[in-house]
Image (tube, rainbow, N blue to C red; front, side, top):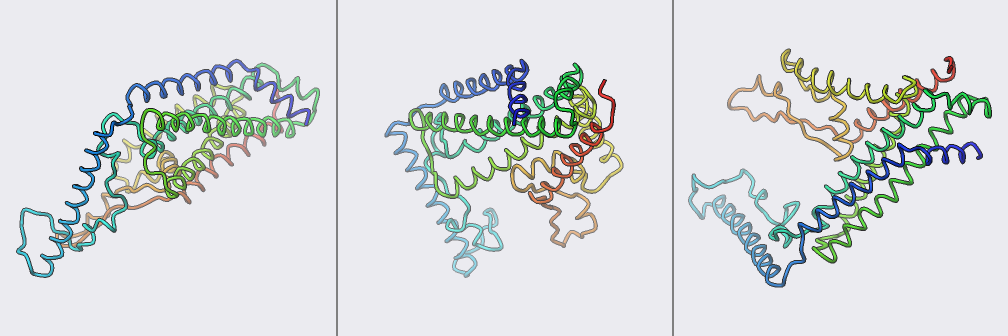
Length: 337
C-alpha cells in the first residue's frame, strides 16, 4: 500500500502530468466557450416554425409511402422520374430508425441530444492522447533518470515495482477520466438547459451514450498501457512517440499505398485504425471492390462487409497484452543501469 501511495504522489508531482491537466482544462474551456457563442435558446416563434416543418416532413413521408403502395397495387401509373423502391416498407415512416424532430430545423441552437455523442468522442480522443503520453513519460523518465533503480533499493522486487507503477497509472487515469466526463457532460447539459435545448433524451439515447463512453474508456486504458509498455521496452519516452509515428507513416500511410498498387483485397482489415473505429462505433461498414468484379451486369452484388466490436476488442487486447507482457519480461532481466 505504501508503494502505491508513493507512486500516486510521484505521478501527481510530475510537471508533464500537470501540464497535460492544464491542456485538458484549456481544451474544455475552448469547447465550452465555442458552444456558448454559437448557441442560443430558441424563441417560441422559432419553435413553432420548426414544429410546422417537422409536421410537413412527416406528412411528405406518409404521402410517398401511400403513393408507393398505390403504384404497387396498380391504382396509380408508374412515374419514371420518381423513385420507386422494390419494397414500399423503405418509405414507411413508422419503420424508419429516426423521424425528423424539432431540433433538425433549428439553426444556431445547441441540442444536447444530437451533439453529445460527437462531443464525447472529442473527450475520448483527448483522454487517449493524455493516457498514452502520461503513461510513456511516467515510466520513460524514471528509467532514463535512474529513478527506478532508486526505487528498487527500497523495494527490491522488479515485477512488484513495475506492476505497482502500471496499476497506479491505470487507476489514476480511470479516476481522472470519470471526473472529467462528469464535469464535461455536466457542463454541456447546463448549456443545453440555459442556452439551447436538451433534445430527445429517451432510454435508447442514454444507453447508446453509455455504450460509447464505456468503449471509449476501455480504449483510453489500452492506450495508457500501450504507452507505458513501449516506453518500458525502449527505456525512454521518445521510444513510444517514435513507435507511434513510425507505425502511422510506414503502415497506415505507406502500406496503404503499396496495397493499392499491388491490388490487395480488403486492406482495411490490416489497419489498426479500422479496429479502433469499429470498437468506438460498435461496427464499421467497409467496401471490398474485389467482391463484384466477377459479377455480370445483371447480378445483384453487394461488396460491403462489416467489422464489429468483438473482433476489434480481440485485436486491441492482443496488442496491449503482448506489449505489456513483453515489457514485464524484459524489465525482469535486463540491466537498469
